[in-house]
Length: 363
Image: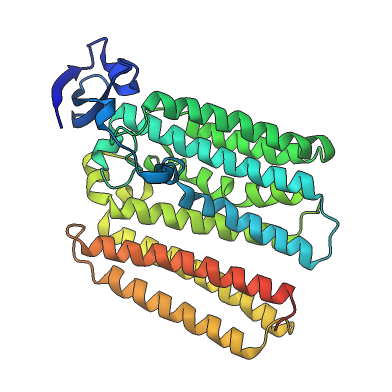
């Protein structure tokens, strides 16, 4: 593949157009090296390639990476729990408004993902974390400018999808106020996203937790109860644990770049205990929840015992790999973090199956 290398500094007026991908209609500029993520002194080397030499994956599979479909689980799971909760209590739900609101949440989540990738690309953070991004811009499949336009489209689309719920259930505006408050915290930082700032990690907890579940509950026409709050708190805690796990996996790079998140602030050893506490609280809450279901006769002892045993197995596997780590270098830290992420997804699947079985009266 023929290409040219070109290095631009911050003072070069062409830098922004090269990063955005708007400098040419026939070529793509792919950053291969960044010296300094500080905009005042950065220097970026680009590999300039003809667009005809860049072939995206077959059948548009690259869109799964562009939209980060797996991240939508953090929205789909609480939405599923709220929907099952209303079906179980025989609540009169507003189907159209509820579905539109859920799709609107998906759309806004996609918009956030696209905007984060765009910002990380402009600032050079994606070059510091080569394994943590979707890499679609770096592969030349899309331009940063297209990602930015995509984030605007999904933001507007998400807002429009939320209008039916606002019109029929005006109290949904309280949840929207929460989104505006905690979302504005992230917007205060253009150069770095939520995962790089310690004080703004709280926004992840609320936006993917209580604010989301309360907003969806109101959109469905239901009333706010303790279970709605519990679902929100649990999902927010789970999302924050997932975020801390990703930061722990990249702790060496984060500390070198002086990112001010909780994991980099605590350091390697203390962060292992941070993840231990987060996992312990999450699992303990689930066990209490399962215990209440068992005491109320909603599940029989084989399912209850199976849930407890599975929880202990997941805990042993994760904590063993985590506390065997001696340093943040090498592949062992990735294996420990992968075990944590798989544990999170396994708990989500098991709890989803549990809710469906109870709803259908199978146990």
